[in-house]
Image (tube, rainbow, N blue to C red):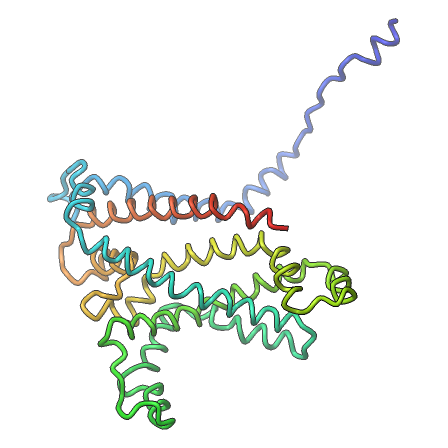
Length: 315
């Protein structure tokens, strides 16, 4: 009986002792990242949230607490802000149906047995390494009234005279979409390639033995098996597209007549010191706009994850 009691008795929990020198070394290794997170991310966020309740134009003597006034103005008077949301959604709906299928098509080609895969992967990923502001300058030069694109179209006989791409809202939006697709689709190509590499080759071999066509293989095997990764790619693409701002400012500056301003480009162009056209703007109101925008984007991300749960369980 005593032996049974000894066997069934709980053993004392032995806590693993950590070497203090190793703990200090680990914290030193991530110290710069922690400092960067606190100073570059968390502090500016807290600073902006605090100023959202103030009138602040950069002059301390004129700073005053206004409570909900900034937020009331956003929801009752600032029609431009809500119009930029419509432009942002339009931009997103135009860009993603072009970018994602194109990125998947390129990934399928690179996943096949072709020569110089590494070279082509580098070529398609290269635009991602270029700053969005530089890409904006490149595409502005390409589609300028005296730019290369008009010269090519005239030489091919497609147009008889140069097109002012940035004078018409629809044409300016088209150029923005093309430039944005070119700058970001390389990342999605790599994501799709990584997802395709995780599909066992035996699955394709079995489908080939069964005589399945490439169309059936793609929709019945490839797409369902990469669905969880596709869910995250869509989330990242939606989030990245909604945050487009500096690219728009460099290429169109929101023109013509503010018709191509996205939410972020409007906030930057109107309320960020150094970018704002007017002097002495209410930076506190800009902080309130940023806070409201962050809440809306969070809601969009949560709603998307709720709606897209079926993708994660597709296979």
